[in-house]
Amino acid sequence: MITSRRWSPEPAAARAAVAIVVDATVERRLTHAPDPILARHVANLSLISGTSGLRPDLDLAQGQPIAAALGEMIAFDGVTRLEPCVAPFVGTPSEVW
Image (cartoon, rainbow, N blue to C red; front, side):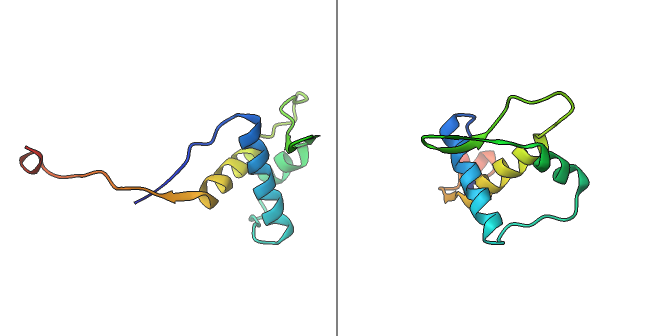
């Protein structure tokens, strides 16, 4: 059984997700179908550079959505950071008692 850690809205988690997506895009390990919504949201996304790295700028101008771009980052981050875990026991009540 495999599970991923939960994505956190904390700046450190956002910076990690941005770094993973940027690296994968530059290295051509991450591409997407020509989806006009995702392309528009990625085009609207701006990044803030700080002392600890890049993170998404969530101060949005009206009419410039970025939800699909953020969703892509969160999903890709979650898929690439999978960690093994112990599967819980699943059985019938007679097996449990």
